[in-house]
Image (cartoon, rainbow, N blue to C red; front, top):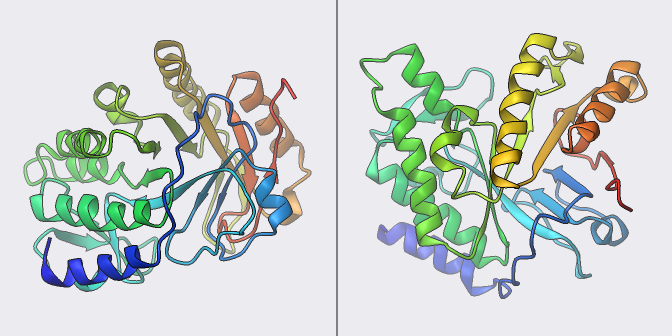
Length: 284
């Protein structure tokens, strides 16, 4: 860790609460993925699991769910507090045109791995989060498929990153978002999956939202069901719609289909800056 990273991490850890013992995810049915800053104590207390933005979220003082910190594993973001430690480094590959300020990274880089695992993740756990949700792991598949000669071994590097995290943090909860192409290598190291665009998908504003093409949904669904059958680990489905479509038939069908498959749905707007619709488990 660099001197600058140590100073930044030390400042975060100094005011951090003690990390609570992570509860099991098997019983987590009422869940949310929420990137806003504040949530009511009542809503917080009604959740079993919450994925939040550790840089801005203000946790209610009341008891609440297993709280996981959002961590981008395949991109560095200029809006993050760690950006000064990433800016200008060789592991930055290219901007992501779909997300302002996001830069795809070379996950084969030991320098990126250390920044992610020993600064970003460590700071989140020091704040009291029970673990992390790793996002953008599918950047590895995108880069390796788009330029195989240049990015050979990128998917393997993404797998090693997850395995390294598990080895370094054996008591932390680890979810991954998407990254289905890596499942064979990481299934034993993670505690569950979050999946987007399984039954619904949204275009950037002001574009529409709608159902995922059926052939795509079936293909992903088969992989997810095989993962559950093999590991017994939960799948959390992140469904998107605009507010005006919240009661549309295709949205209701997506929720019903997720629950029928044994997955745990959560319905929200694409920005995830407001609490969406939380669904109770079938057994409650």
